[in-house]
Image 1 (cartoon, rainbow, N blue to C red):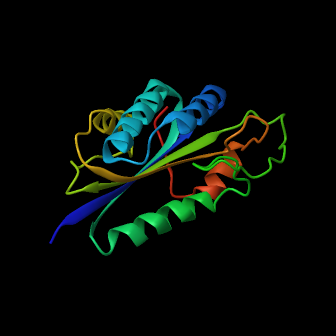
Image 2: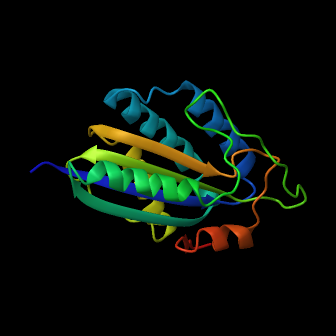
Image 3: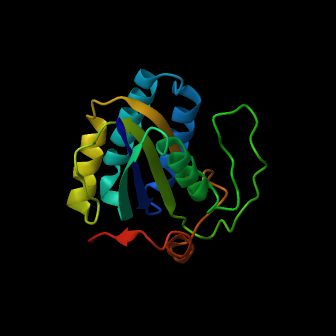
Length: 183
């Protein structure tokens, strides 16, 4: 029976990285091809490289791996991605032409950002960890160099626009499963 790995990597970033990451992720979302395995793999490499570039600004992270059968993998992947999207009350970007309206947040808050990469790949992926900075950086490096058939990819970042801010307290409340990284 063919197995699939569904991997979720969520990374919390501090205010120093947030504005540029939001802009770059938005630009990538408009330019990547998620319609083919090759396009998804290229998008994953680009996104992992971009997150790796700001690895020093990462404050929190989580890695979850699950192996599933062909029948179980798609609904498991979809549920994981949907649960992440539902954590933030304002969704502004999807791989669709229409985008929901944006409500401005408190611009005096410096603002943190959580980027979650959810991928589905054929077979088993090499074991990784993200419970400390060294593990997170190694995981991002491995995703940047991954050579696998990526059959599904979702990248969810929140908040997604500069005028919507999330404090550190709000981030740790919305994402309590994230582990604080070493300073």
